[in-house]
Length: 379
Ligand code: PLP
Image 1 (cartoon, rainbow, N blue to C red):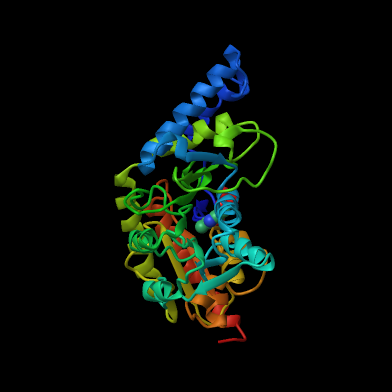
Image 2: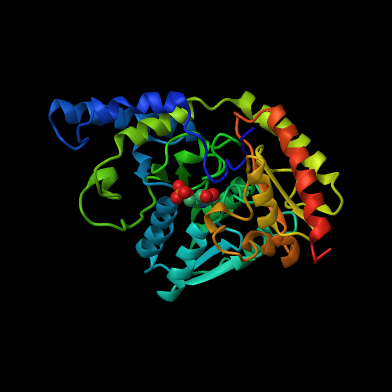
């Protein structure tokens, strides 16, 4: 049996998405900026995709900028806003448990003379909104706080943060890469000015994402070379990717959220029946597909490899940083002890996950954890 439970790292491209994309490789392959009929066909598909994406998040089509994915959207949002607003102020607020695509951009900006406040996170995995309010200064130009965390799945009160920023006239960016299709998303209701998306996290293709840019908010483009994407992101448009992105959105179904939540709850309950296992992050306000558990006295990497031997794919810490053997910065920000952070495993489900796969996984985890503890020098 092969079980894929690493859907926060990436998802299987839905067959319907691949089918919808294919004509744009072999038939309608024109450059969307060309004015002949091949170009026009590509342009039409691109603009249809843009319109559907904008509808999904309650935005206008010309507020959607296609990018190569979440990392680029985060870079364009944060650096773009910082450079556009630097004459107004140089202070940025973020949180300690953001994805590296946000944290590393903030660190790079610090080297360029910007000042960044990194907000602490509660044990349950939520940004302290009172602290955020207290951190705002007269020269604060940007707040960037993620919608849902990629490691522990906690969902922040973006609407509340957004209304504080709106009141103070501060640009607000949210990294919504993990939340699409798993929790409601309405950029107007959430008062966000900038929001990052990535299609491969919800059964779309890799290499296409978007940045929502509210009309009135100015960002500076980071690359030179053309006037595509409202003159904010030059380069030949990824038409097949955009079609795949919008097709994946069309396939999202509330029933899947219900199904994933039930399986998630079942998996959490069963894993917590293992001695000295603890859930990382709140059970409430948590993504419907995220389970993150620490198993004391053993290394997450050993559990991961033991499960891989049984055909089960999971991750330790964030997939993007799993090359490093440092404890996850997210778990450390929550106050999890480094040794427990080392023993953590993230299981992330998708709409394709079945009860049979979860039962198989539960048995496998119980066996692997028991066997590892028998030989662990830490227990
Ligand atoms: N932001 C978050 C919260 C993520 O989980 C990821 C990917 O893991 C990214 C950004 C980066 O997205 P991409 O892989 O599309 O560059």
